[in-house]
Length: 541
Image 1: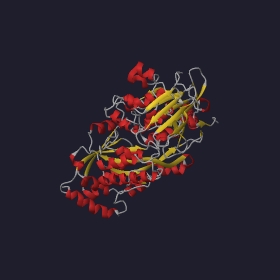
Image 2: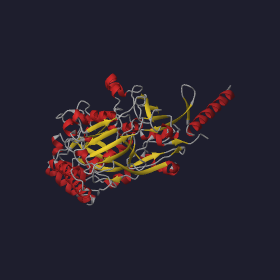
Image 3: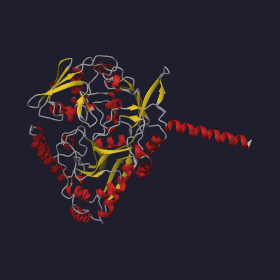
Image 4: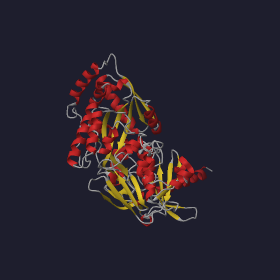
């Protein structure tokens, strides 16, 4: 009997090992309902998206999925430069104010309906419509009349977009915007399938109901687990797509994502856990991809609170953070310490930094203590507040490190509170926070995508920073056709903002992915944009 049990145990172990080995081989081939072989790409994608409505979504995880589901007038190439998408070509007027996009012939929606120029115009109108309440509406504020429409001062019909015929989209700007072609690749500028919205209302974005125009169609979303999209056979470039199904695994915990990758559940990860980075470098070096990213990690102040309307408090808290130590000892995967807001390497821009950036930390601490004392806080009467961040290993480590620096240098008592990502969004929107963790991902390779974020009327200005001089500099820059003068004004605006310290820049991201060898066509770029349709999977061994 014992021998039988022992033999059974050995067989079970062998079966388990075989299952793991099969998973580790990529488990590339799946079957559809008809029993046909399909190619399924499995991507790690962090926590759940906040929405899959292209005109309302704002989380980075949502944008990853939406870039597969929808295609704008343009898309991005492997270097994140704009190239033709649904539009085959475009021209711009001599004054830089009128862009004319010519659509490809015979475009269709995923249900086979014809896709026409008016669908793009309708999408942009829905984006700026106050009833949509999109926090991305101001991204297209450069389009004529958009600011007044967003503010409810003009009707949506007066937006500077027109469709003179089914294949022509004309966008008229209020001020020159050389970055417009890149902006038209952003999911928020997606076209609108008007019959779906009319029939279903806000339910038109649900899996199985959503009609899209990208390479894939949304079929399933199991909250906290995965999102599944399948090939859109009506997509104009479907013949070049080597992927039948994309499965986005929504895994918020970095270590759990690594385990899923190692067991063969993922073809590539969204991130790489810092706590295991040394092991990864030693054991998975050939699968590790690291590159610069157009993203900043920051702590925002709730400037609606009296405590944080005091510049001396904000400045003191920022000055004592040793960002170099944070990058080298806590993060440890190549992130760059951030003393400015716009990341280095942005096209036609010089990186700016706070005036204390080059001072030794010890000198900064002395000055910060004096500032805090002037604000009425000492070790005997410590400054107390809550630092709220979303759950995740890196966010917890950064919060503990920064709170320790505040405590050691200033006697500050920061209560650390971790919440789910959606809850953090809601808390910040309700202004139910003191200091909060967030990041900002550039929507196009231009400094304005960062500087606009802190414009007083920008919907995603989470600290609620309001500065007339800052807004005026951005307004002046937006009138410039001289790119050198535009750059000077934008750099001056950033310096103005940094002196006001409405937030604490901590570090600039790098892209960090683990990629299985069978993934073909992989590329890295500053925007961290990777379209699933650009990839393929090598045949299973």
